[in-house]
Image (cartoon, rainbow, N blue to C red; front, side, top):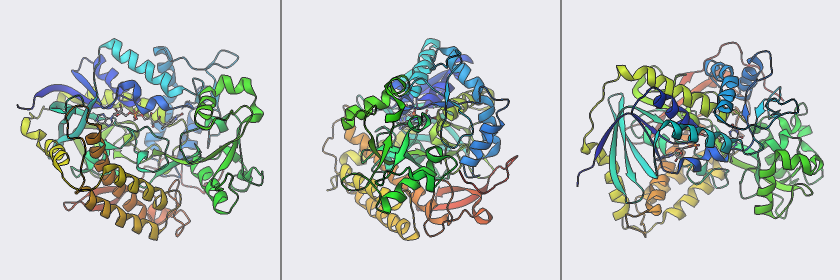
Length: 569
Ligand SMILES: Cc1cc2nc3c(=O)[nH]c(=O)nc-3n(C[C@H](O)[C@H](O)[C@H](O)COP(=O)(O)OP(=O)(O)OC[C@H]3O[C@@H](n4cnc5c(N)ncnc54)[C@H](O)[C@@H]3O)c2cc1C
């Protein structure tokens, strides 16, 4: 049977906040739009966001938010994109509110805002500690009300791309592994993050970075992949996130000597220094033997002084998480935490209108990216908490608006069923392979080694070791065997495909980290402990060459009002 080819104006891959925001704009402009998602939209990781979404609602201008974001990014963020995002933030929060998102209120009835790390004012708007869920439910409802067409449980495995132009995707229906081509003038990737590449992480199972590898396999660049954020407060050894809202509401961190050790690392901001700083501080305490717990590999997060009323009103989800996963009650007990891989600053490079960049100078026709999979770059080397939901909505919406503007000038490149061949062959090989390795074993090896070698602290030696490990895993992957060869909801097959993506983009993370011989934001080299603006105030653009080796170039950062300064908290 042939592969059906469906024609649309716009195909959006991903139904999290970025995908939904874009879909609403496209639908309002009456473009024939389809949203494909491997999950039900409401299962997207956006729904797991807890702490908040930033906006300078009650400040004279958005300039301070802009500066905090630039400083947080360790001056690697593009200042044109940051200025745009911060300027749009207040209207975006009101847009969400007008659509029906119920934010927590202050006593005077205004939207309540709490402090977050690295910020000079309390800017995080929140719905208790279920902010992402509130925003995603609202956006999805409104998209649905407008009649946006969603196809859930469709797995997208390839981009249709030729000579600098994108013209659709190949996907299969997860119910029966039947393939289809979605041919379109415009393709938007809103496929989310990739922290699942690490053994201990805060991300949903689905955050496997598929979109990035799919783009890279066509020779397109990935930007700043070496910058992976470790969130300070994951539940120790499990990684499940306890939101930064815990520290925003006044939570303290203690070591085994019962000392609030942040005094030694960031006396000005203490627990509310930026995430890279706090995560390194925690790991340093553990390394120096001042960790807590049986293996001394955690520190305490203490919220007991906040009182039950505050915790119930502002952090109920965190209380639930600690009860369910630790059997402990935040109201009366400290909990053990340790940094967890959380967020990817890098991704598919775009201009500030969300058009994907083909290299330093050229754009791809008909290809757009937004949300965590994209690198526009508003976070540079380190993201500030509560700036990511903001990014997803601002740039998801922007992507939709840009597509509406561009669409008439784009000619549809006709796809035919031969365009599905690459992905179909990939699936066929995986199903028929008769090797001896299991995906689960290889994935564990990759995740453990990424945590060990490309984690919070990195050295030339650890990064070279990781490149060798990935090469071994790549070879072994050619000899895997799936125990399930059926076509009905074959999750083992899907995990194998997702793992192949992980193998690809971990090479970008590692190679980028090896070549960046400096420390900046979340990227910390023990052998190059200083920031080096002379050589590395630049974005890395990395490509697969023909023999699938990663090549890295450096591209200028957009610097406007804020000249690089020493960064301390
Ligand atoms: C636990 C947690 C708490 C967080 N808290 C906050 C917070 O308080 N504030 C904040 O600003 N940020 C927070 N973040 C970060 C923020 O939630 C995310 O960066 C943001 O929501 C990403 O949105 P997105 O639309 O880009 O992607 P997602 O919401 O992750 O959606 C990705 C979509 O892509 C689809 N997809 C992916 N691959 C494929 C494929 N191959 N085929 C088909 N579909 C595919 C998925 O089905 C999904 O619909 C948090 C993150 C985590 C993990």
